[in-house]
Image: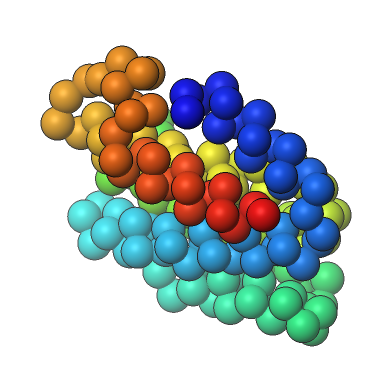
Length: 163
């Protein structure tokens, strides 16, 4: 499978999913990427792991429909404030931190507006993180990245969650 085929399949599956399954995909990715944000904070001594975890917990409450919309709206700017700006932090670990916090931000937005584009973006945050990891040692072609075991695993993970 190449990147274009993966994207087409992911979009097809994602848009056919009911809200609850989309939400579960988003939450699963947020929890998976959280540890990358933790590493970012350790390296740069910037950010707030507790606040990001509180935001994930707030999202988690959404599974049962227990989240107060106003509480989510208050959380959005707080998560935005702890999201690394690549102009300030230009290394790979910062990209990981950005992807992790952006996934949480988009999950909060999804709870409010139920726009599936947030879920698509969240899937991309995971695969972008894997792409960065794969290329830490050396730059690879798109074809080499698509065949890399870590990318194949990430695509499989997302495609499994979007069924």
